Image (cartoon, rainbow, N blue to C red; front, top):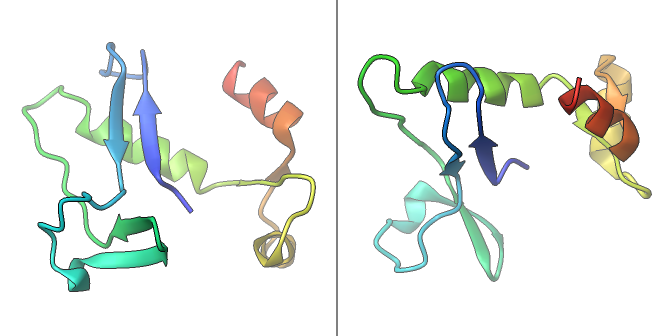
Length: 103
């Protein structure tokens, strides 16, 4: 589950920028536009990124695509771990993940 994406010094994004997929808590969104996760967290179904040329819209999309290309597994992985194995998706532990992002 992807809650947000934070980029710094990636492609055209120089300053730290965060895109959150958490629904606002002021109830301004219709429930049909939200995905309930638990009693404290809802996610938005659709998100749009707007901005002028060179503002980082494509950078955000590329970052999200990069995250989708592997699974980060903790100490007790669940069903998504097994599904990733079946699909041949690379699985990283915390150490390998940190090595990858710092490369």
